[in-house]
Amino acid sequence: MAKAIRLHETGGPEVLRVEDVEVGDPGPGQVRVRHSYVAVNFIDIYFRTGRYPLPLPNGLGSDAVGVVEAVGAGVTAVRAGDRVGYLMGPQGAYSDVRLMPAEFLIPLPDGISDRTAATLMMKGMTVQYLFRQVFPLHGDETILYHAAAGGVGLIACQWARAMGVRMIGTVSTDEKAAIAKANGCEHVIVTSRENIAQRVREITDGKGVPVVYDSVGKDTLEASLDSLQPRGSLVSNGTSSGPVVIDTMQLAAKGSIWVTRPAMMHYIMPREHMLKMADELFGHVLAGHITSEPKQVFALADAADAHRALESRATVGATVLVP
Ligand SMILES: NC(=O)c1ccc[n+]([C@@H]2O[C@H](COP(=O)([O-])OP(=O)(O)OC[C@H]3O[C@@H](n4cnc5c(N)ncnc54)[C@H](OP(=O)(O)O)[C@@H]3O)[C@@H](O)[C@H]2O)c1
Image (cartoon, rainbow, N blue to C red; front, top):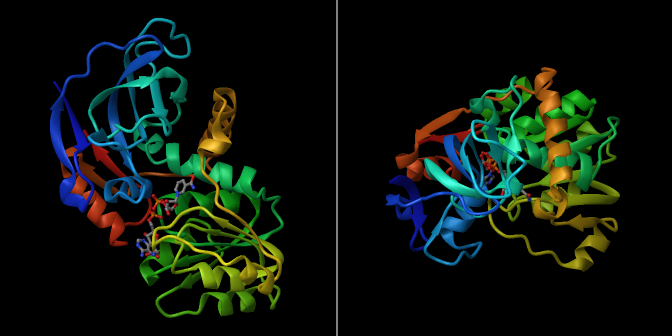
C-alpha cells in the first residue's frame, strides 16, 4: 500500500491526514513515480482551504521529484529508472508513490540532485515564466518583487542577479532581508517598518518601476500600484494575503497601469515548451547562477506542520516533505 495525503474536506492544516491507498500499475500514457521529495507550495494552501475548489475527496500537491518505477503502454518520453520531476497535472503529489500522466514529467539532469530539484520544479519554473514570458526582462530594469525571501522569491533574487536586473524586494523581517540580499536582491524593503512605495520612489529617483511582481495580493495592491511608472505593469501572480479586487478607474488614476493575473498552465504547454523552460532553469543552476536547497524539511506525515509554517510566514525559501 502507498501512503498519501488526501483531502476529504477543506479547512485548516488539521484536514491533512495520511492514508493508505492502492496505486496499481500504470495504464496507457501513465507512469508510476516513487517520490524522493515532495514540494510544498502556497497554492496547496489555496486548495486545502477551498479558496481554489477541488472535487472531494482528492489528493493534494502538484510538485515532486522521484524515480520512474514502471511505464504504461505507449509511453516513450521516459523509462523505468529515470529521475524525473513535475509541477503540473492531477493533484496527488503528497504521497510516496503515485501514477502520473507521462506528458507532465521532466527528466532531471545528472548534475542536479533530487533535493535541489524539489525546490526548482514549481518555484524555478515560475520565475522562468514571470521573468522571461509574462513581463520579459532584458537586464537593464529595476523591478519590485514582493516576498523576496520566499520559495519562489529566493530563486527570483538569483535569476534577477544573473540577468543584471536590479531587484527591489519586500520581506517582513530583518532576518529575511539578510537572506534576500545574500541571494542577490539589491535593495530590500522591510515591510514591518518601511513604506513600500515611498522607498521605491527613493531608490528609483522618483521614477518608479516598470513592473511589479506581486504574489502577496490584497495587502500589497495599493503599494504596488503606487510604485509603478506611468503605463507600468502589475503582474499579480499570487494572493498569499488574500484575493485582489481592482477597480479599473484606479488603474487610470495611477498612470494607465497594465495588469495581468498569469497562471502557469497558460505559459507552459505544449510539452516541448515546458522542456525548453526547464532547460533554461537547469542551465542557470548548472552554471552556478542559482543555488537552491530546501530550507524547511518535514516528513510527509507532518504536512500539516509544513502548512502551518508556510501560512504563518515562518518559512524562508523552499519547504519540502520527505515520504
Ligand atoms: N501564478 C502562478 O503561476 C504561481 C506559481 C507559483 C507560485 N505562485 C504564488 O507565488 C507566491 C509564493 O509562493 P511560495 O510557495 O514560494 O510561497 P512563499 O513566498 O514561500 O510564502 C509566502 C510569503 O508571502 C509573504 N506574505 C505576505 N503576506 C502574507 C500573508 N498574509 N500570509 C502569508 N504569507 C504572506 C510572506 O513573506 P514575508 O514574511 O517576507 O512577507 C510569506 O513567506 C504565492 O502567492 C503563490 O500562490 C503563483
